[in-house]
Amino acid sequence: MPFYLTTELEFFVVLINQDQVSSLGNAPIIVSNISTGDEYQAESDVDGYVSFNNLMLGNYQVKIDQQFLTDKGLQAEVAGFEFNSPLKGGFILLPNIELSRSESGEIGANKLLKIDLDDDNYAPILKLKTTN
Image (cartoon, rainbow, N blue to C red; front, side, top):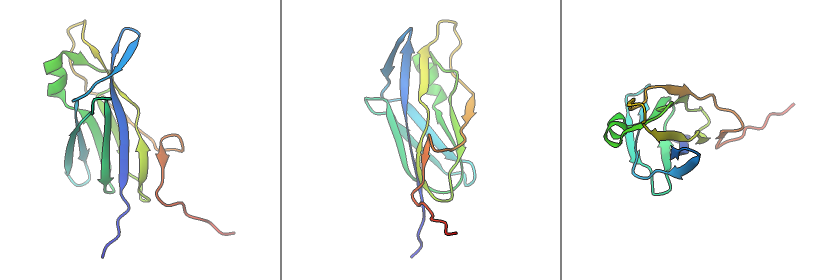
């Protein structure tokens, strides 16, 4: 029986209105494994929380659905993130996806922010001991 180390990721989708930040539920999120072509979809919950479990090794893109931004008249500086899932599997905490109402008429977002995993945003499933 094969044994796979998978990755879990989580983040929030928030709406920024002037100086106030509120959670945004029902925001459709797409996760694509660029390495395999696999694609997964979910929506943020009532608290804006999004999680994906059991992601296999690969180069991933995580982004908010562009049609949702258009339909709701929203914009974002960053539409999502790109990262490489680690060989050791683990838990990844991504930054929030921050949306705002478009006052300039510009709707949507295209920029994907490259995320480098470190101790602040990643915890491995396995911690390997080294011996001297």
